Amino acid sequence: MSRTPLFRRTLPLLLAAAVMGAAAPVVSAASPEAVAGPADAGFYRMKLGAFTVVALSDGGFDLPTDKLLVEDRPGQVQKLLGQAGLPTAVPSSVNGYLVDTGSKRVLIDAGSGALLGPSLGKLLAHLRAAGYAPEQIDEVLLTHLHPDHVGGLVANGQAAFPKAIIRADRREAKFWLDKSNLGKVDASVQGAFDGAAASLKPYLDRGRFKPFAAGERIEPGISALNLDGHTPGHTEFRVESQGRTLLVWGDVVHVAAVQFADPKVTIHFDSAPREAEAHREQAFRDAAQKGYLVAAAHIAFPGIGHVKREGAGYAWQPVTTAAP
Ligand SMILES: [Zn+2]
Image 1 (cartoon, helix red, strand yellow):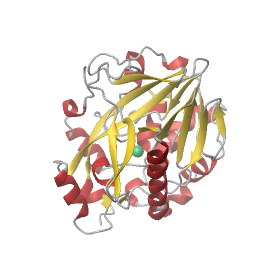
Image 2: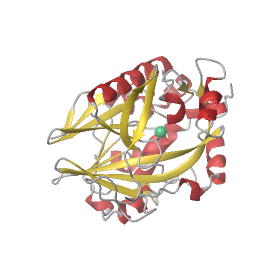
Image 3: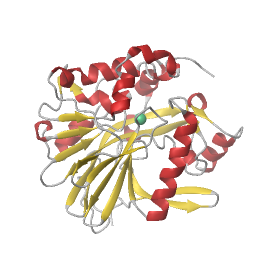
Image 4: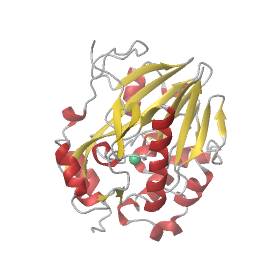
């Protein structure tokens, strides 16, 4: 397998070649509770009880599955991609989610900012398009500290969210903010150390970074749950209002067409692939059994839907975003 530092080299090259139009989200009003922005606005708004949730597109890139995915059975990835009519380089989304509780505006993941090339880094523009100024964000919760989730914390060298407190799992921060851990991860994610340090610096300097412990309640209706494996402090956020539950996933899924059918397929970005796989299966089982709504960072925009049992595996059912 390639030991190329993909995040620093291959990905930006791939991103530069990405077909931006193909990744541009197209949404419109759909289910009775969904009120979407204009077509291809890059945001998708829905109600969750008394809360408003806004999916924000950071853009897209083509994920080279042959270089990055690790299959449990030879030929499995190509077979599943073929069944889905997808190429080896799979068009992929990067999404963040704003939760407006009415009293607080909480952003979950910040997108890539300037770290990963011009086909990404659009979250801030789409936040504004959805009617929010960056100064209105009270908190930014990070599922983990990889560059496609933290890069957008910085804009033009400054804190992009000047009034926000930034929060991530304590183990996650300890790991990625200490470069002596460099040798513990795959070469494809070694660039994440510099990315995390640069993205958090403006907030660390001003005492605005506050780590949390797994299981902690962040706000009324928002708690942080441990999903480690992809990274040492990988987190999902459970958002609840008036009896409705949304689970916001970071990197539980990278390629939906492959990993729902076969959750054992991992990715070189995983710090601990076996733990990542176990938590993926747990997350799928939990979401399918309880019927929770899920929002996922790398499922096709808006990345919101349900998980269903299908055969020996699972399937993804996106919310309906087509015009009625
Ligand atoms: Zn990611």
